[in-house]
Image (cartoon, rainbow, N blue to C red):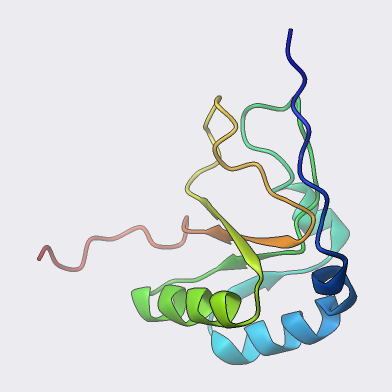
Length: 115
């Protein structure tokens, strides 16, 4: 049986956590930002519960504009992003990292248009 090991976190990102959280609030003020340990624990794994890691934060946007703003901010600030739908994957597709935000799309539950 092989052993999965998660990558070592970026210490620089961890040291900037408070500043990153403040800037995320500004980038997407209407998004829900989960920062407390108890709230983040809900997102520490998907349905594959063999591996757990508390994310830096969890962001729940409710519009495509907020998703764009969050992704832009993360790219500009070298913050990793783990996208998550409902967290039901049994394949480990939404495993967070200590130095990454989880971008949870569960609030985006309507199709507004099809292009």
